[in-house]
Image (cartoon, rainbow over all chains, first blue to last red; front, side, top):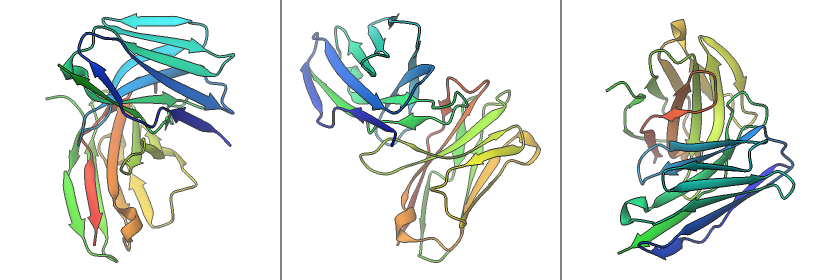
Length: 112
Length: 112
């Protein structure tokens, strides 16, 4: 069966450090992978998309890598700030029709 | 504000009652998605529309759930004969082309 796994434990990190989150998947061959941010009581917000032929994508302090051989994506927040505290979700689109399959998310807590 | 809106934001109902939720997508978006999210989990795909056509329903969606998108604009999601297991956050998202999705704030349903 298809699975998307993210670190289940919250990631506690000090302000200024780099947070690294992992997304592993099985039984998918996605054309792209997406990362979303979700704050409590709110809907997810799109952050980044990386395609299968891209190894790395950056947006401001965010960096995503995608290894289709390992079936893994890493999501990095550099120079983290307390405002980065949220749950980060990885999502795959099995057939490119937008029917996103999400991981359970990893909560990030950045302390001053 | 031209984002995705959902109404109501919160709904408390008794088991066995019917409930209906509304989603207003971003106006030029042709695709509209419904997801359900329970505590500690990522959103789970329920159904989606391209314009007014409902293209797919998740096999996890029981016959008590029905969705419509008349005229390809707003959408409604109805749950008949609610059960306690229906308690969740119901999220609506829209997109143009199906990749980056814009989520609404969600409707939190509590079934007593």
